[in-house]
Image 1: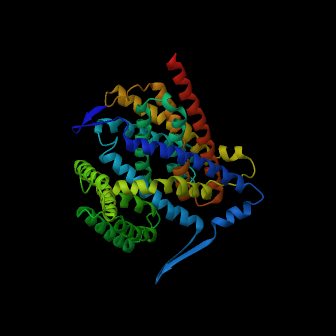
Image 2 (image 1 turned 90 degrees about the horizontal axis):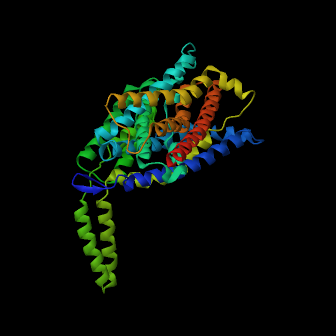
Image 3 (image 1 turned 30 degrees about the vertical axis):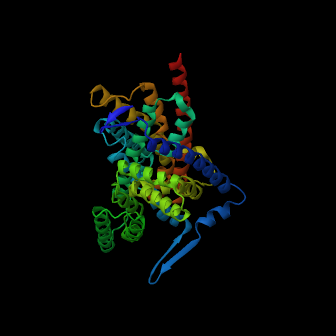
Length: 436
């Protein structure tokens, strides 16, 4: 336990524990979805698999209509909700989480920076001379937080809490970098008219925040308008999800002391209540108090978590991870795209993270987390090379030809699998040595 802001809080907060365990269980579902996609895409029913995602779905309200393939609805629609959730996590961590303290946040941010620069540099070493593939430098920069935390979960209490917090904060900082990369470098031609309307929605969202509007319905409706404007503007629609998250209030309507006092009084009345007609009123009062003591950000995050972990991410993996393996897999891995992505993830992440962390510690800019050794940091660099979700997403934005996209997916799956296995073995071995 430690003293912070006049209250005793545990090093591993309940919010972090909920996030950690939900991410790990989500990683298992994601892995199963990936396996199904790969088996389906290479089975006798492969034509049906690829035809399914090309089915057009039409949605229209009055004169406003959208017609997209199922794949686009997943990548440009459902993934907006995922990025909204990522934005909520980033905002929470910056304001009240592990990134809220400059001292605690500095090392993960430095590590994330190295983990983005290293892979991008290696990718460009192999692809800078090829205009059709050079745009894919952002693919190996990303870390899949669900898979990475899932591997740590397999290690249980063998891993110190400081390492789990370090990896989580690093991955969230990495997500911040990935969002910026997508916004700045993976956009098409811009429509200033739609951007202007989108800016109007952002103003309305900021006003709702300023006046502490707590209705999640208001932010949902305005968020849908913002998403539509970005979808039509040329900036990738998923950025709308992050911007929406930044406007969600973190203020509570009542403080914890008020909540405890009022709920205690209501519960006492329930115990002594002899009138059944008042029972529902008292229960409703407790429910209202429970809602008032939670910020809209927390309510959104809590409500979305199961849908993100068990619906949206599995759907994304099912639609995007299926690659028909034809010809020689080795040829795909040895292509400029394959080498750039695979070595960018495996080597670039290691070199980038460990070198930036080493420099920061040696220069006394930051310090290693408590009970975390250099060996554990190195093992974690392998887990950070699990690119999967965000890497697949960026590859769908970067490549316009099926040949490059297939080579990219094969490299992502290969590098992520190798990194997960090696990272697990290294951390298991290090703990075994430490116990001796």
